[in-house]
Image (tube, rainbow over all chains, first blue to last red; front, side, top):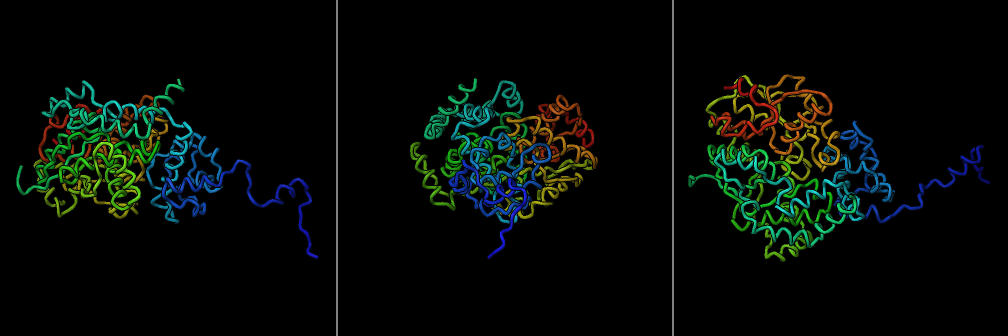
Length: 193
Length: 300
């Protein structure tokens, strides 16, 4: 008969009996979604931490990209998508360049942000950029001071973009409307007020 | 316009034409001086901002960037641009759509609604890489275009992120300690300097500048400290968004952290313009938040 090893502390023994990490709201589809949108095999991550060690946001916040990679693998969708740290990635791609598993943790983060947006979780500044582009074609539009400066330089007051050719705007709006982006941006911003 | 010149459709983006128009003016003039004609890309929009749009819905990002590429395809031209952020959107989406049929079909279904089709006939280049490429310009020709060498000026190079990274999908080689932009700076007679953690991000990307400005500025502040440690007269970059972050960021850093730097920030095209003899007025250097005067005193 095999000797049954156990801790004397019964509570600890109970805790360790099930060695498989288990969280009731774990969603096994989460990692598949992240991999599909981010086009990277995130489940191959072996948690070495090179990503967090390369991350400019890590030393000045609680943002840990390695943690997000783990949460993706474990299906901890709720935790990952509701964590405000998700928005502290500057997308510098240092982690992606250095990942010894040839993964793209940055793109996994982008995928998680896409999934967060589907639940209306998104910082306001992202949506304001959508509104600006819908209106003018530019995320950073022209203004009067800049028009004066352009004139002084011998440039036309409006650059050769949608600013000078607003007839291109309907096409841009059609693309954004196809994805109902403006509609959703307006709605989410209004709800937050 | 010379018949032998290389010609590109000039994708402007947002921050260069709408905040630092001197970069636009400089890009057109300095490129002409080395045999590149930049032609208007009529009706182009925001690239769109890879951090903001990519975070919301990558599919919209693909479609919007593809529309800009198609405008160049319709002209039968390659695109040249002056911004790392635009490079990520325009170069990367063009690259992805050329190599991923499923993605291209999806984008074309949307573009069909506005009578456009992505065909994959155009290439996308950053002006900086065209200047470095001897088949187009090259360091030697660049040096020959200099009329007023920037002798004695110590210049730190900020490469930014989205031009060279992720390196596996790009063609620039080493991203740990590249030196090709230092060669571009040395060609102008200035002295490129090395500093701690050269490849670190400016802090602005990924929507972080808008989401948590103090966090973004803290990264910028660290970079400025690392540059000042070795003693510089200016920092140069090839990304107007990085420029905005370093330039206006210094005002914000003073307000928020009480730290004063006073480091002049110049896009490489502005630096090239000065070296080719353009005046500070022709580059609208007065629009910079941090005075460029100390740098001008050094070189004029």
